[in-house]
Length: 458
Image 1 (cartoon, rainbow, N blue to C red):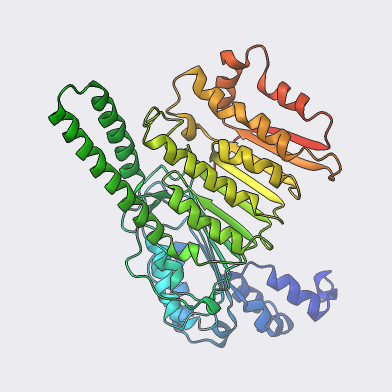
Image 2: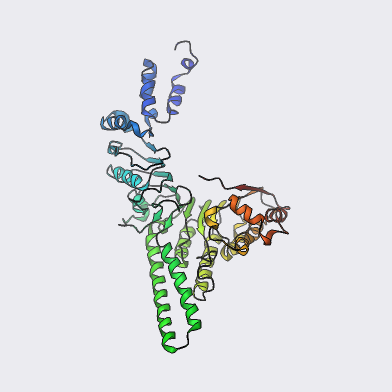
């Protein structure tokens, strides 16, 4: 060791090197056995600030460490739990995390919601000082737990929240977003959240919405064919009953998102799927954005088909069409008030009247727009016009958002699935005017960097 290059490093440099070991207790234990100097540095609190648990087969060793009451555990601020990709799901065995009394950051990868909820409950008992909960690639194989805001409401000191589900939220079960079992009242002065992400999660009410849309369309069709007054009255009563169910459905959604609607002064926000959202939900969401209009720099919206319009659910309904227009107008109001927005991402989010009307307001500060469409979004498309209804407004939106030539060089990124790219190429509406060529020509005189790529699967 005395002649090695690493021995020439001073203690401060070695401390930084040991901090880069990823918080693996087995690596740090091995380092401590090298020599007295390394042992001494490996005992620094900064070296044990991170603890990583990523080898489930070594459960017994992790459990012994956490049960030991060792002084190192008091230094742990960041806890990371990772699992490898599973072909067969099995829950992590419970670990005594109560011994991590000063934990402030929780990171997980490839865990299911039941495992994350268990961790959340364990940390609550300390009491919770958690300021960051960052869960990526949440597995959806497990059906023992559905997402509710209870998971985060237990931790009033949170300022960064991220729950991102695997793929597009349609595989498996646990990506369903249910109503909270208990809503814990959190004083507004304790709300510190600045970054919030809840992505690729499906509202459990979405299927109810689609059923109501279909039922309303059938009733209106029958009304047009009704001959007798008794039949007309019966259908009118059925229509009123469906509308009452719709209003109850709206109220349930608004109550379920109470936690989200209580947030303010956000800096980054990623939310969706928004398929189930109604005008009333968008109206409440507008209040969140209004409270964050001077701070919100990054907004990402997932999942919107204009209340089933792209899938032709209740497409010709005279009752549903005004509701769709109300929702679009609320979307317009949401985005028009974001004075400091620099980055906008739309994932499987169709561009309708609302976004087109908001585009001139977005052009003031926007620096980057990223539009993503995956195979799952177009699986119900079966006519050439469907592709045009999806892609046609994109050109108008992009050229309007980036219309100000005085702005610095900006970035437009379009990610389309291979299936959608092929459908566009073969579509009659784009035969004489290829989509990407037309878009490039529209942006030719503006300082825009256009990036056109395939969607990369997770």
